[in-house]
Length: 366
Image (cartoon, rainbow, N blue to C red):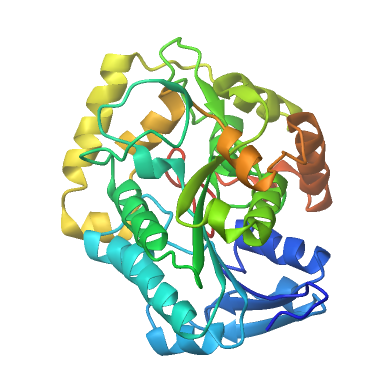
């Protein structure tokens, strides 16, 4: 357990993924001991090269492996989950809800003191929402959700917040649109990849789409601060976590594509055509075999992310645990471009396959 020097043993789930990997780095920089929960099939090459990281093989679907993973841990940083845009209700429930419930139970029984859950603003997304600007934590959950990801993320978040106790502090953070270096399968490389390949039409309908995004550095800073904040301030509470800037989404995507040698979309889908295509795809994906195995080429959720303005206030996080963005958008872009160059350029960064706005790994899209 933690000593008088403030060093803690931190368990990071989803540690081989994009956000999870950055959480590992952040905990190491803070001087903590890090235990990384990874699947047996995960690529752990990078993690094995980090001094001070203990690898533990396990799975959110294996309760016994979770009990082993949390033994002797002070803080759980739970970022793993199903964040792709395909799958059955059973798959989403197993990975996002039941897995979180089992991890909560194991952590509480093991004497873990703090449980920080990486949630998502998607937990509040309803099927008929319009633009939402400057919303805060008073915004309620919808009666119905836009998709299974949103619904099960909300269910997991509710479990985490309800588990808060005087001796077991739980908190949920809602970073939005996490981006930054080492993301190879999240929303940003997918969208930019399609733009570079000329396969991303302008879906905005000529509308300016204003959004909040969250650089990975800022998400990590929030997790570390929430893990150290007084339990009476943060226990049982959710918090939005975003960059300081509000972003014109299509202008941002266009700029990044141009910096990587591409050009803006030359095709524009009128909203009626776009919505008709989405309805047709969603109807086809009611076929169980498709829903379980394949991502939709276009989905209501992806279109909502690309056409609905959505910005969030971070006043509560600033007040309760001193959250401040540590990386601004311009610095983040320079760091991202440097990383892209280091791995061989835009082709290595982007992936033209997959659905609009889809994500894989840990925390690619929230």
